[in-house]
Image (cartoon, rainbow, N blue to C red):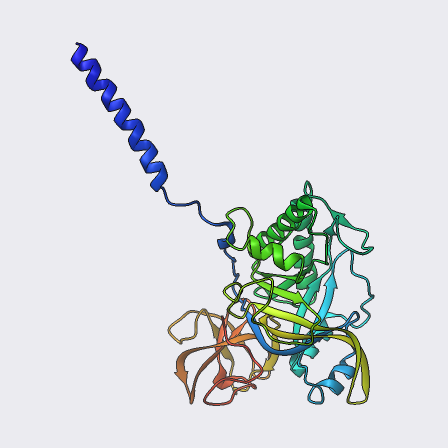
Length: 361
């Protein structure tokens, strides 16, 4: 009987030791930065690699026409919402977004919501460590509503403006990380990418430090303010090149100043952009003499879900490749996820991509 108890005791010890060993070998918890984006049908990611500018009030379409081609810029930010947004936006409508994008401007949507309580400046609406998550979630929820009202499609990157703040307050640094994490997760759930505008010496440092955190969701892109006149998107002093390294960076490299192009003067900040921007549908028309079939995929073997009459308008989101029709393998993806061959659309180039339309990503 004693021998039996000894065997039982040794098995128990062995079991405890094995449990400890397995715990030490267990796989790490899934990192919070891997929060997935849920892309709905009819969405795409648009990317820009160019110079841009940001200005408080969206310029008129006439001003943008004057600047395009005469200035070095072909991207512009839009302050599209937020309870700390400072400027009125008389020009910013769904039609303005459509026409500015159709003219060749990439748009960088910026949301000026709640700010950290230790922010330098006078923005009135702020968050603390205790309510940062709820504020980030509510701001992201509102940002999606405002974005959709302007025709900014799922897949667009929406950038939360996080102004410069006091990093000597560790609780405030926690608040910022909680806000950005909640902003990121809520946008991902709605099918949008999460960007953040930050100062190089506050927000960028803290988000870089938590880049591989298992506690905070990582934003998809960073737009860093450092007014040193250098548009380089690498060799930043407060974030290594390995972070946000694939079309995930923008830099505001020059602050407030006036520039005049095409006879029009605008007060701007200058930006270098290699990052996701707004995805906006472009309108083209059906060129076929009979009704054009829209399908569930880029092939005639997929189901027909709708037909468009000759001359009908088509809201083209992006282009992809598929079955060859006529002289082209290019297909247009429409809002709602439908596909039509580019051979029967007014933007067609007959053999390859249409330059203004983004590739489906």
